[in-house]
Image (cartoon, rainbow, N blue to C red; front, side, top):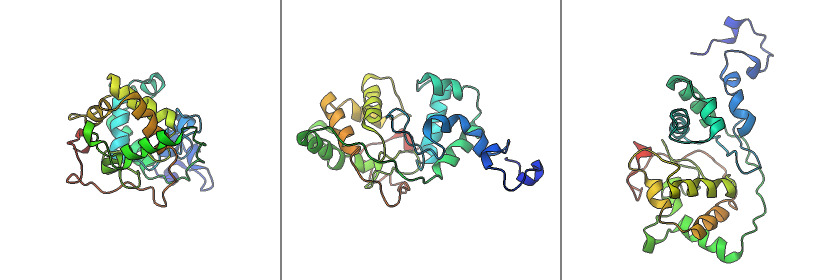
Length: 224
């Protein structure tokens, strides 16, 4: 439970992040890389986390803490944080709605973007690859409680994460639907879908869609 400002004797004009027992102070380690409101950075490696479902963010924090998702700075940062603390962090960033950063100009050619659009919006039935929008939402803003939005992510980050799933470096709760999907994609497909996703305009409402298990093409442990 966070202490009220009055209990700490803080002046009302004191910025929240300077209030020692505020969530804004607690997440200063996060905002160094992910931006003050979780908007991400333009270097492609620190993703937007603002507005993603709290369940998804919590699952990732636990995975980093427990070592099932590996990235040394994140593993170190959350190594000793208890679940209630991680829930607070996840809920904080899930509520944020900062503006989306400007898109990078795509260097992909037309056939690559067309292939990426096909996978993202219709899937590839021959390879049993469902459309990205079937789970990540029509506006690519994610789905409650555990599926992240994809809009606003840089292509380098998307390629890196899909590749990690393909080679077994990243995992999710069983049944791991992303593992099944990623291993059916070729390297060319990964580049194509990442390129197309990164060209999409920011949605008017970045909120995740409500849970809809009936619509999902695969059973997904992240939605339990």
